[in-house]
Length: 284
Image (tube, rainbow, N blue to C red):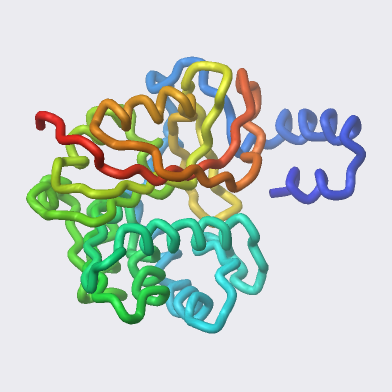
């Protein structure tokens, strides 16, 4: 977070050296991990933490007020200050809204599965932007989120068991900043993208275009999360090819801007989102 503000006011050449100096005596918020998923640390506590749930729950009332019409949608649900206007987050929400509209064409009912949906932020947004459509919201996430999710949105279908949703006919599956935390993401996609899925929207992830996929570590202390976690930084073209093999066609790309620099990374990435449509059936 310190680096972010220094970059705003510092000449590029000086910023480069100041950044390295700050990282040397503190930590890199994002860092390339050469060992990949074999990296070990006592700080790798992941997402299944009560503290993260409590932070999201404490901000829920303010978040819902911020996304109600006619308010603007320039809000990041993980921010510590909802008064800040966040252009990237507004673009993320509007792109999600586009995916919802596409998936809900000629329908009065929209069934959404949010893969890694936390306590249900996207579910609330969907209901807010589609007041005339019955949104049936399914959410998969870790055990720690279950009770809080049902508390804030009692009509949602929450489960920490991914197999709970395999028999549902889904109009839209969304995975926002969740799939890249899965070491075996390809197998996971193959499992939950059954032939009952019409559209999938994968978003809020960092992709590279020249080098191969690699692993990075994120230290989200600035958001109040006292944890660290590994994630994939995927090659964009390879990622798209995996979805195509699963019977999906890319309908639209969404560009959200350059990602935060990843210390020592072979290539710096960009934040992308992708909307895919089912075009063929595959053996499952």
